[in-house]
Image 1 (cartoon, rainbow, N blue to C red):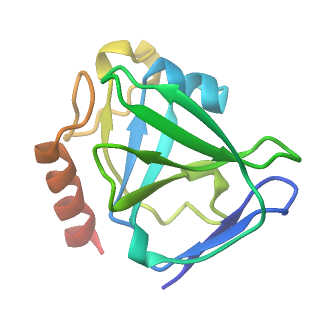
Image 2: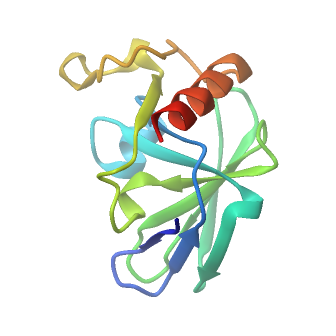
Length: 148
């Protein structure tokens, strides 16, 4: 099953075959990126990106880990589409809000809960006070697969 999405103006479009998990992130960078209380990150294996059309610009910032995060956004409307994380070179992360229909996705976990606005915590069973580690990522993949 393909999941499609785009930026606000439609100049950038994408389709992914399947996603590994959906994660809510409460870090300051995600709050600024979305203009909201948290960001939704849809993690996808690179091989499952079926289509990516349009020109993006890249903004690079240093994560708290000290590694670079490269955000791709539409130069016309400013919508963040996807980003790469150095700790997961075989994966891409797509902005949850860029998907056309995200209602059927499962929120598998949340991270940076120690920075969450109290009323914005989702209360996920799988969570970390800081950055996600391999143990959390594996558990979120398993939770998502078992729910399908």
